[in-house]
Image (spheres, rainbow, N blue to C red):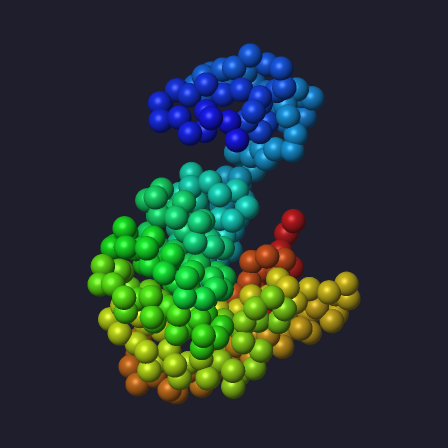
Length: 281
């Protein structure tokens, strides 16, 4: 990593220690990079690197936001690939509900960039990880964070960490169902987690919904993959029905699914209707 990336000046010098900068090119101030008109395909820039076609990005935003609005759903785009707060802000400005991240480090990046409504779409570990999360969130009392949980052990770890200090924002639990990487594998497993979540609720820890992750369900057989995803969504739908019966209040619930390989959304009107759609590359 170049020491230029640690500079606190408004015009740091960049050189070929920074990914993408042409090897052997004299250092340049950050403000001069745009005028060089370098292109990823001109053979000058160091590889690998990520580039963005702004016109295509704008078109993709328009198409995606039009799609979700037409279907009456919200979207919290995952930021883990570009890790660029400016791109997340463009999506939020276009109507995205929030931003999704994969771990505590990524959560820190977006909190420090001013984002406040975030989904941490992963299991974070045990008590030590829960304390790291609480240490981070202590600095953001206005944050709205929802986190995946797929075990009683993780619920207990978060409950312990949140009981140790009184300077934390509320944290929402999303009970996760899965078919490969993580998540409860049966409705009964989800109900066991639900029992503990509801018994542990406080003003700072509260059930806020359900999550499902389909990405790790993919196999080399497209038909088998589709069946595994349908099974996951059916299980999640069955749990939603039972959850609604359990809740005495009429609290709103987040129901989040899809994102990696398949675009999956819940069709309003029936908790038993889901549709997996292959995401565009």
